[in-house]
Image (tube, rainbow, N blue to C red; front, side, top):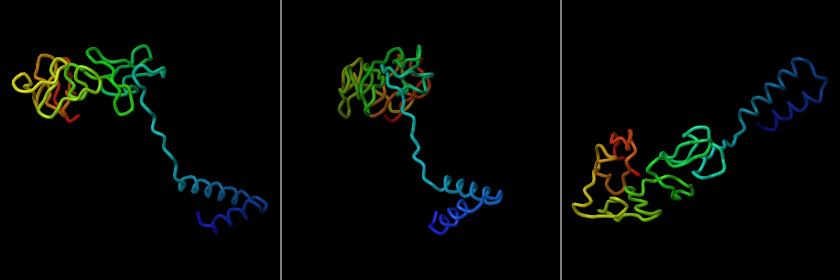
Length: 159
């Protein structure tokens, strides 16, 4: 709002208020409120194992966490590791970023199989297509997320 509009608004409130001036002032204040930038605070997700309560799985950090008894915990087959500054759930038997333990990354050309980074035939991996229980794991840089991976109905997507 420029200074002349502000001065006009101030004079209007200083004078004897009429209904017309009150309405103008209210609309002026509403316009100022709309024009002012507001800081939007994005709600942070609830970390696995935190004391913060959750209502549903969408409140929990990561795709592999669930809300149970108002607390975020890992889904079956997943374990907690810290990534991107948050406690999240990973399948350490097949996750190329947390293979066997948190933070152990498989090198290019290797794939995490049963918690160990492997190369060659033992590392037969898939870039596209189904993944999950009983199927080949996703190649390095990909994770099994689409669909229902635990039921063998998932797909490899970029990590």
